Length: 394
Image (tube, rainbow, N blue to C red; front, side):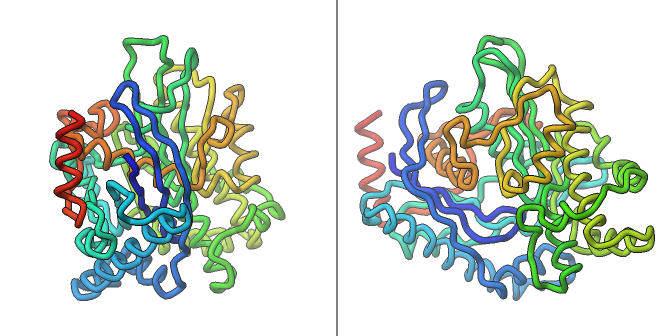
């Protein structure tokens, strides 16, 4: 099947769209990116998204308008990647849209009780004519799971190594990891959870320090000029989230822009310059990831596969290599995947599995009571023909 995957992550930079070719069924499923694009948010859209992630910043009226506006933008991104691949919408079978997470309700005991992603699927299906699968996370939450990280199931299907434990580490706004047993281990289960802040605190701190001139520390250039305040880092690592046992998830609800501003003020009070504040916050991301491995990895990790925007930050990657040694730290490209668009591939794959009435989760990954078929299907103009073809092929 040809499936377009769409997502905007917690960094809220824009929409990743990947046109994917998906064949087979688990455990022998194959998924490859045919063509991919990234459509950046305009500054005002990004600010609307970030405001929607903060309590009291956006009311029900603004959330309603934003839900529709993002639906239009996700539909446009889908059409963009289809055109870039020199195909027509009629040649595409499905769209899998994660949407834009604006809230993930985690209670004090770690239970997730609600999750909200925006980008109206009906608009995507109407504008493209393509049957659209969306709203993936709530079904897993309803079954007692964390509703995240959903990328972990694709990791389980596609990325196990022959004979070593792998950690697949995404560093978006939030960091998340999947610990994968090797293929020659037929008894061990995978484990996945959010490790803590990825780029969220770094990006917000950079924007605050530069008074909006920069949205993020490109290539770690600012952090490279400072030094880590090890004493402050030790204090930051005492945050209770890091010690909470998996399954667990988090987001901008906890590691928020307000937290970042408070940390910048705290760093200044400790006598640090702007560069050293960012160096220490970069070290916090690396150290919290390494701490999660030390606390919770089911076995010694042989390989770490990095993805997400943080994998493009050489200062952060160098810190990770030092803290995760002797594990080999690789980028997704080194194992044949596009790091920038892997998550879009994931939601194409999950849409494919939903269409075939197969689970999109593993209970060991999210903590759900059982595996579930994820998402909601919004018929497009191709719906009846796709049903007939799927029935004939089965």
